Structure formats: structure tokens, C-alpha cells
Image 1: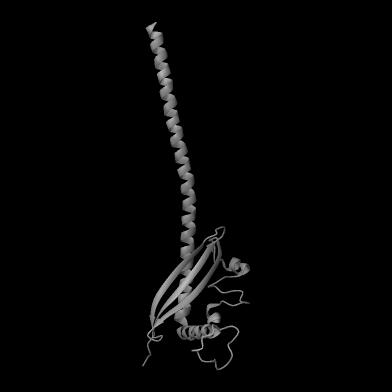
Image 2: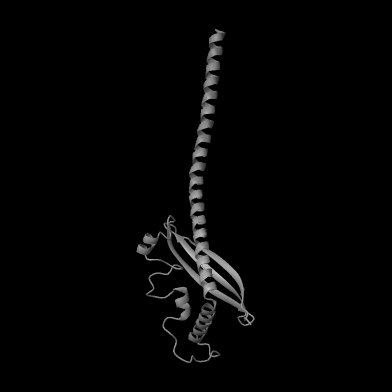
Length: 190
């Protein structure tokens, strides 16, 4: 009789061990699946962030090329832009303009930010041109824009140019801000 009750106890104990081991495996499996699904989501966000950053760096390089290619136009148009803003804000220390301000300032022409402008690579492309050129391919970029700032010292002989690019990926609410600062000095050639 002892063998039957010993066998029943062993079978009962084995059943408890198997159930406990199965429960542990089930819990570990659920934790693994949850971790895997969260990691996949984070990885997609990281890929979007990297793509937006590389795109922004490319736009900054294009903007930098434009500034390097036309440094005098950039500097004069930026000075005009600051002068116009100060005058329009009511600053009386700024003298009257010699002639009326242009509707589209030279700085707006340089940066490509003005109404009626349908294509400017620093800000946007029409969907047709973007599709034809494949400019944003294979990225899922919804919008982008570029701003320039000039922080001067030594009466514009030394300046710090800031090029900010704002990128929004398609399907995302947040906008990534990417800043490039450059130290630029101006010297006269003899």
C-alpha cells in the first residue's frame, strides 16, 4: 500500500513541479514578448530621429554652401533685415530709410521665405517636384524649414552664424530642432 500512496505523492509532486515550471515559462514568455514589442517601437522612433537628423544636417550643409557662395549678399541682406525689423518696431534711433522698404526683402529672397514661393530646397518642395527629384526619398518627412541668425561682434567683422533646421516626420506630432553654429570672420583683401 505504501507504494501506491508513494506513487500518488510523487505523481502529485511532479504535477505541482510541472505546473510551477510551466507558469514560470509562461511569465518569462510574456515578459519577453512585451519587451520585444516595446523595443521594436523604440527602435522605430530611433530610426525616425536619426533620419531626421541626417536630413537636417544635409539641409544645413546646403544652407552653409549658400552662405559661403554669396557671403556679401547674405551679410548685406541680413543687415537690411535687422534694420527693417527695428524700423517697423518703432525704434526711433534708427534713421528713416532713403527709399520705401521692398515688399519682399533681400533676406527673404536669400532664405526663400516669402509668400508665393512654391519651391525652395531649404524650406519645402512642391509634392510633384519632390516626387520627381526623389529629394526626401526614402524618408517619411512631412515638413521642414530653415532659419538663419547672425550674432555679430566687433561691428560685423566677426560673426556667429546659426542655421536652424526644423524637421517633422510624417505621422509624428513632434518637430525636431537641429542647430549649427559657425564662427565666421570677415577681413578685407589687400
